[in-house]
Amino acid sequence: MTTDVDAITKLELFPVWVPFREEVRALLQSGEGKVAMGLKVEDHWLGADILVCRLTTESGIVGIGDAYVWLVESATSPALIADVVERHLARFVIGRSAFDIRAIAARMNDNIARNEMAKGVLDIALYDVAARSVGRPVSDLCGGRQVDRVPLAIVVPLTDVATIERLVGMGLEKGVRTFRCKLGGGIRRDVEIISAVRALVGPDVRLRVDYNQAYSPQQALAAITSIAPYGIDFAEQPVGADDYAGMAWLQSRTDVPVMAHEGAFGLRDMVTLAEMGAVRVFGLNAERPGGMTAALQAIDYAAARGIDVVLHNQPSGIGSAMMLHLHAARARDIRHATELQGHSMLEHSLIQGRLTYDDGFATVPDGPGWGVDLDEAAIDRYQTRAAITVTA
Image 1 (tube, helix red, strand yellow):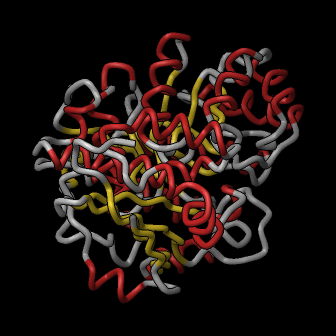
Image 2 (cartoon, one colour):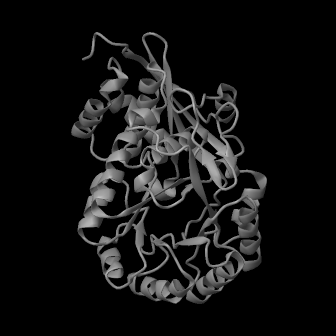
Image 3 (spheres, helix red, strand yellow):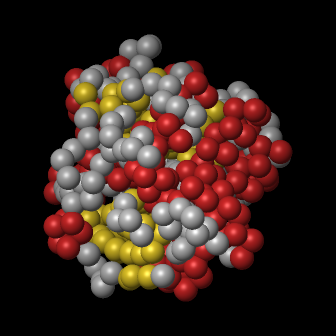
């Protein structure tokens, strides 16, 4: 245990649920199924479950982190994550210096299997505390900022072609040059959507597609082959998240890079997929592999293997700032635009003020830590249950 530095003495967890904006809820409910994508779920997607973590040191330095949690993909909930943190993980953080990040991560991994998101929300907050304690941005703790602005991509839901064209047109007006189109409603419909979007954006705008596990490997091969002539950067999660053999079979038969997202939660998942030749792209939500520590490792591993990485999520302003710092610190190894949809989807970003989005880019926030501060009034407004507090 560290005794000669500013130790963490308090850990707080705030489960919140933030509704989507009314126009977003209407759009998602009017699309394919309940969620305007290929997933066969039975509940409408109306908002975001988020677990916010706040750490406080003996001298009063405060750091924050969060995890956007969707049970459909994450197999957990804010309440389950909070329980794991309170009962099992908090003891590895309380009393330690935030600069013990790697040692804390190792102890968490040694004692608790998987639970990447529970470990991740703590790891993310630790980086904020450490950076704030020396008055520097988090990116400076990760090798230094390589860019000040991050290019953005926009996700387009699986709905009617006219609505898709309208949404893409709005994105173009905002300067966006990359779009992810949700597919998976059948090959004929897939082609109809991609051909219309390519005709609208022209040859230079980049397109990526996301099937959300809609197809079998054989169906996925036929689907990807049918849209390949329209110029696709990669095809995200065309088959079931746990069908690694199917992903490998598929990638061996198409030149279009296949991306794992729902199927690539932890570092071990990513290594396994890479060793099987099952992917050429990883989709990365930083809280999923276990926070910044594991996310940095994942990007470095992918770069060494010649595998691309895409950062994307629907996070709060906290998670968005974190993703921007992550991208900025590894920009030379990230050649695809980052997707940050939270600011346009959520009713509130849970931070004071707003991050800067302009001309298809997001500006990496300045200031110590993540460069954003928690809006406590918003936490009070959206909190779904009593906060959990663990003290030294």
